[in-house]
Image 1 (cartoon, rainbow, N blue to C red):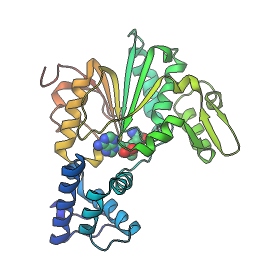
Image 2: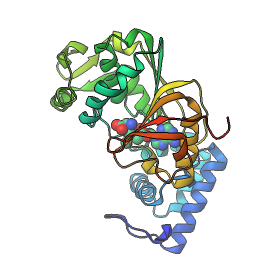
Image 3: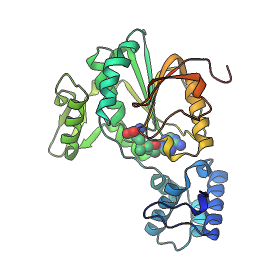
Image 4: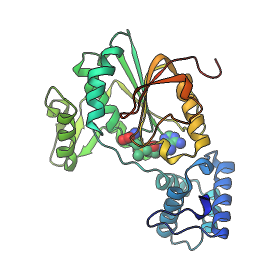
Length: 290
Ligand SMILES: C[S@@+](CC[C@H](N)C(=O)[O-])C[C@H]1O[C@@H](n2cnc3c(N)ncnc32)[C@H](O)[C@@H]1O
């Protein structure tokens, strides 16, 4: 299927002119700000561009171009629109159960443990891992790096404060993930929010990192990049997977999302599949450039 004619529920196909407008918009953003959305999957990108046009009361995609290149605050708002930040504590509880049974015991053999959550959104995945490590007595020798390009999400993550509306979902996920304590032990709550404890928070470094262009910053024992690659085209997926490959220690783990995998990627031969269904991979070989 041609990208310009592809459509998903709720997203009308792009005509030739609109497709050209999208190309020009993405090129302008890249040249002005260095954010390369040219390598994002078109259908969901276009849906989000259209949402932004409605909010800003614009009638054509082209009208976004001058607004974006002249007004960096407008661009900041646009960036938030481009980012899908759905996440949860212990999202996919069965995966966290497997981490408990098969992965964390292997990480326990290292004197220090570096973990990277790439595309951490509002931080719940990083707090979930901090809880897991604490239950294995490993938190004090772990450093969790949680990164995203969405500054608003990072601010929420840094505060570690979440709505109490989510408490039932969080608690159920924690229990389904094999939690050994009470989730209440890890936060304090007031009338409408919960705040994760300082003990968890101080092991996590939340930082801005753009997978479109930023590089490696430490050698990791495990990298989580779940539900992020689905928004990228093949070329960007490969670039990011090569970055992860060069950031992982030998025998380090890579965790992908439910709908993502390494098959047909440029790094497939550098990894062994630890669990195909759970999308857990393990680095086998030196990276392509080593
Ligand atoms: C759907 S959330 C996934 C959150 C979490 N990993 C999970 O699975 O629950 C996708 C996140 O990827 C981030 N993201 C998308 N493109 C990115 C990029 N180029 N660099 C860094 N983060 C990116 C978005 O801002 C968003 O917070």
